[in-house]
Image 1 (spheres, rainbow, N blue to C red):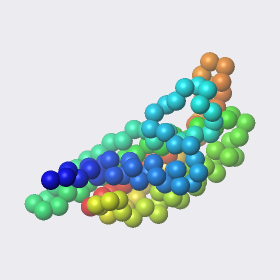
Image 2: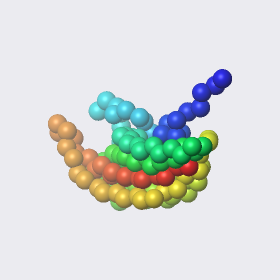
Image 3: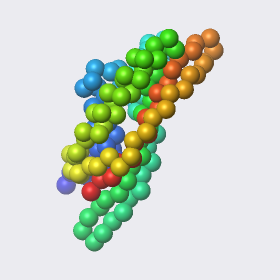
Image 4: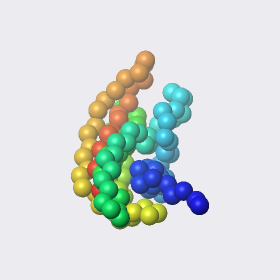
Length: 129
């Protein structure tokens, strides 16, 4: 019997796929400094499973980071907005229906060594059933 992917993994995969479909370099790890900006990093995920006698449902919070050149804030906010729009359109994964319960973002300027950059942070709360 083939084991089905967890709802958390299905949501992660769908978020990753949506970012790629927008043409963004997308990773699930933080690459080396010479990787090049901009890119999308699918980051932390938290979940709460609930179960009835016959049904698994619950919530998943997913963090998505967008890294961009510190001189290109407008392009960063456009990428963040495009991603949020794509995530809001999610209605299902392979085996679960999905609702976006909450989505928020913020932009922060960061520095590593001599490099300065913008990081857009998107936090999404999904409900799956």
